[in-house]
View 1: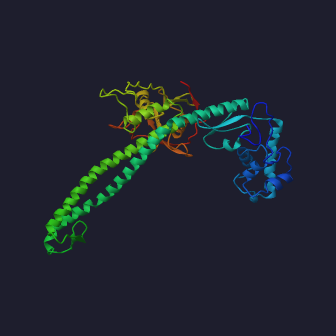
View 2: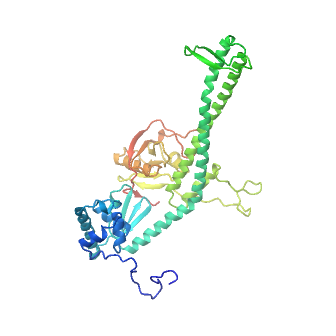
Amino acid sequence: SGFVSSVREVLPGRKYFIPKTMEKLDPTIISFDDFKNQVMSKPMSIGKALYSTLTGISPLLANEICYRSSLDSEASTASLSEDLTYHLFQNFIRMMEVTKSKEYTPNIVYRGKEPVEFSSIPLTCYQSADGYEERNYDSISSVLENFYASKNTVTRIRQKSADLRKIVANAIERESKKYDLQKKQLLDTEKKDKYKVYGELLTTYGYQAAPGDKSITVLNYYTNEDLTIPLNPEISALENAKAYFERYSKLKRTYEALSKLVVETEEDLKHLDSIRTSLDIAIAENDLVQLKEELMEYGYIKRHFGRGDGKQSGKNGNKQKKTKITSKPFHYLSSDGYHMYVGKNNYQNDELTFDFAIGNDWWFHAKGIAGSHVVVKSNGDELPDRVFEEAGSLAAYYSKGRENEKVEIDYTEKKNVKKPNKGKPGFVVYYTNYSLIATPDISALTLVSD
């Protein structure tokens, strides 16, 4: 109504018209002189000059026109020579001809499963970018339906996972602070060996120290160099030696305890990082169920129990029904017809590797970073090189390195992958493996609907 818009009422029966408030130019009839003098004369970026001066040109379309002209849309209009301005104008006119002839190609650009942009013309600015896929549709109505349906799914999953992400982020922050403190304390224990040497040398040469001496310089028989040892003048040299041995023993005990704690904290951080990566690849609400279960199992989320009977209960004390797990690993088909499976979380990674895969199947994982286990069913065959490349791309895409251009992947036969004692879900060890460099682009792979 008029209370919302003073320009045009958007109500049934009201006439539609384009608001005249912005006084933009008609892009279908503009001449080169007007393009040069009224559009490209504005002191701003080329892209902004296009969409702020011409009717119906969006920032996306302005960027596409610049891309087709091999120009940076963020560059200043002042950087354009007359030749470059004419080159830009010609590409602009070609796009207007598409509009006039109605040669539309409704499409959506996806990055993985997430829709990024939609348009009625091909977006060449995305066609050469890694990780992007353009899908064409019969009509712009189909584009809008699919785009916003997919967008809503992604948005809903992000909203549903927001609490879990916050829990994981807080836990990572807490464990990181603890890890830094432990590393600092561990660094302080490096003095322990020095105190041991002080004690040993004082035991040997302490008789040379006079009462009240604040230090003594003796020959360090470990290095054949003189060493000055600080002394407490209020006690004897042998008592100083005893004090140094006690400090050494204390630091040694601290070192042994901290060495174990640092490893445990480091493993906890890797575990949390793997859960965060699993949250990034979740595409449906049921994918979050196992992640929440894992967070509860390891104490990051509290379980609710009844009154002393050990049974889970709801807010009213009623026994909670166990959530049914319906999430399954991703199932892809290689170009050569081999089945490839990707775990969506640590539980599925363990299941794929140790329950589903057999000895001669192939196993893939991003090297040194959190990511999914990828299993290729070999059927006892010698796999073509292309299968290894495609499985490597899956391992790269479903890892923490999915935004990188290249990711190093370790791969080996399943029989070489072992589960360490008391290892957390998804954590394995292997000592025999090959490596390859993979691109995290899976747009050419076929996802199988199981």
